[in-house]
Every structure is written in C-alpha cells, then in structure tokens.
Image 1 (cartoon, rainbow, N blue to C red):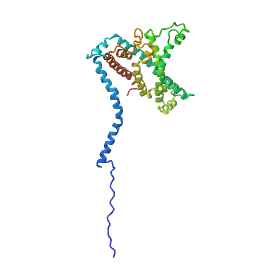
Image 2 (spheres, one colour):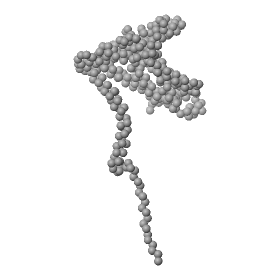
Image 3 (tube, rainbow, N blue to C red):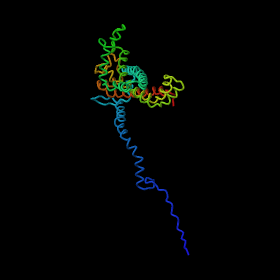
Image 4 (spheres, one colour):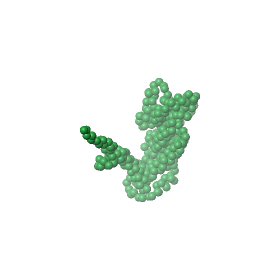
Length: 324
C-alpha cells in the first residue's frame, strides 16, 4: 500500500522593493534628500558669488545714487535729484550720443565681417587650422598695445592712414578733432580686436549644422549663396542673438579704446568731449570730481541703456529665420 502525501507548491517570490523605496525607513529618506538637495548644493556657489559680486553692488550703487555722496564729506540723501540733473545735463547726453555712434559704427561691421569670415573658414581650404588660430591673435593682444598702435596709425603728421590717403590726394586728417573721425578710428580698433572672436563662435555653431541639409539642397539645385541664406543663417539664429547681446554690452560699456586714444587721464574724451563715452563720464565724475552719487546715478542710467539696446537688438535678431 502506497501513501501519497501532497506537498504544497513552493510560494512564488514577490517583487523585491529597491533599497531607495519610499517605505524603506531612514535610508530612503536620506536618499530622497540627497537626490533633491544635491543639485541645489552644486549650483549654489555660482548664485552665492553672484549675490555678493552682482546683486549687492547693484543695490548698493542704487543706494549711493540717491545721495549727495562725496569721497570726504557728508552723505546727504538727495532722492532722485541726481537722476533729474543727469537727464538735463548736456555733457551726459553728449557721452550717450558718442557711445551710441561708436557702438553702431563698430558693432554692425564687426558682426557682418565675423559672419563672412566664419563662413570662409568653414570651407575646405589649405591651412585651415592656421587661419582659424590666426583670427584669435588680436584677442590675445593687450588692449593697451592695440590702442597705442592704432593711435600711431591715425597720427595726423606721420600716421600711416594719412600717408595712404595722401596717395589719393586727400589732405591730412586730424582724427582726434572731429566726432566722425574719432568715432571711425576708435571703431576700427574695436573691429580689429573682436571680429575674430565672434567669427570663432559663429564657426563653432556652423560646424554643428548637419551636412545632410547642404547635400539635399545641392541635389535640389540650390547654389552656395542660397544655401547660406536659407540654411546657414536660420540655423545660426541662437548664436547670432548671443553675439549681438555680447557686442551690445561691450559696445555700450566702451572705455579702454577711447581712453588710450585720448592719451589724457582726465577722461574728457577730447577737447570738446567729442569721443567721451558714458563709461568715461562715470569714471570722471567718480574719481576726478569725487561725486560718487552722481556717478552711481549715471551708472544706473547706463544699465537702463544697455537693457533698452539689448531688447531692441533682440527684436530684430529674433526674426532671423522666422520667429518662434
């Protein structure tokens, strides 16, 4: 006689919960805290530094601008008097006009030349690496050295520019005497120094454009010029906006080139202020006239001018390739 005993089937193992599961107690809480807090901890140094060296100086400068603040003397609260005085100050508006004039003369040719140069360097040419490195040489050159060399080039009596113009019968020009001539001379310094920098940025963006787009356009019969306008320019839209923003900020805070072109530490920008920029006006008021409240108010108006200029440029550049 055989006895049959039915053994129960082995139980199926249930799903294992990961160690970081919400119900895993203290370890899970630490894991969740680490996952949520670590990103904030990693980015916090930037915001702390920005608060110390960015937000605080802005707030403190605004506070100073509301006072009659001298280097040695009483600090009297003046409210908006400094701003009202600046708005009616002809010297300040002269500096604004000079800044805008040099900004237009330098920025527009600079970005156009950078775009053309980047497109040329993106082609398959011999010594391409050499030429790409060559456009960065002006950037690593000292600003003071650049200004000194260009000041000699634009010299009235022995400058090479006047010598070249003299070959065509043009009389010697005193480049520092008139607005248009001084603006043009200073703008060429800026263009020579920063065109290559913008060209390298645009070149890097061009190399990210898929080659399939150009091949498909070539098969459809599109010329190189049409490919440039229909493919390259629209695809470079974010980079063009970036270069315009950077050039706007740099152009409206122009300082070193006109100071070195003047060669006079008074920050007057010529005998009649024909090329005094807003930055030079601020430095003159702060460290020559020791009127820190007035200079702080001018700095805030310059900040507002940069914001307005950036918004205007953005309204134009965002239309490149169609607005989104």
